[in-house]
Amino acid sequence: MKYIYFHGGPGFNANPERYTFQKWMAQKGCEVILWEEPSLKRPSGPKYISGSQCFENYQFTLKKFFNTVQEQHPNEKFELIGFSFGAYAATYIFRNFPHAINKIHLISPCFNFEAVDRNLLNIGLDELEQSGKVEFIPLLKNVDEGSLGKLTPELEKAFGIILSETNFLNHYWRNHQAKDHFLQYYSGDEYEFDFTSFLEMRKTMDINLEKITDIPLHIYVGKYEKVIDVGHEVSMIKTQVQDPHIHTLSESAHYPHIEEFEKFYNLL
Image (cartoon, rainbow, N blue to C red; front, side, top):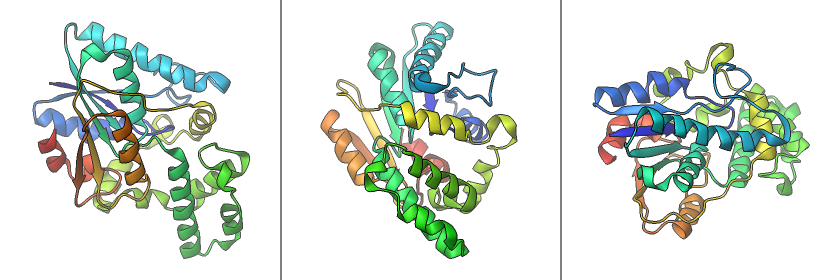
């Protein structure tokens, strides 16, 4: 079976998965094809377009990528794996190429960015209080509730502080050894976090989950998830998908497929 994996984001890339998830799946005899989102940091990858067409270009490159995969693997059917924001990418591909897909796997699916923004602000506040960087706390506390999910200038400033002044990524993980091993591959100019892409994508994207029928869909979440609102995400998916299969992995947070790979693999 061939799997196509869509990494989280926006602003991230699949380099860590190249040295972890893809490698581990290959050891099981499974081929994983990695999607790489457009980025100014990777000129050799999909073309990046700035400004108002950023998200439209993201969608265009998704379809172009899948067309290329089909050309390389004619008459094949695939299973899609969408992690975090990559859940949108997986469902977008299914909507455009339904007859080429056998199954959909959504890991820590992220469609509700309003809830994610709220959770990240709370994480940022906790980190700033613990580190004693209290001068930044008022800015985070004063972000208007109406800004969440919309990336207003005040929320953009808040994210700049969270990204540069806190260890917020610790809250995505339960196993810190797994975290350190994974995050080391977000290094070098080409594969570090692309804050410009993150901002432009957040300002231009319009994501939604449309009705998905006639295909098995599985959801995987970690018991210690702190970033997405699991209850809301699952409830929303249930309105669009008939009888999704839901799996909670007991020793992980936002990255259950990395922290508990063997358990995840056995559920595929």
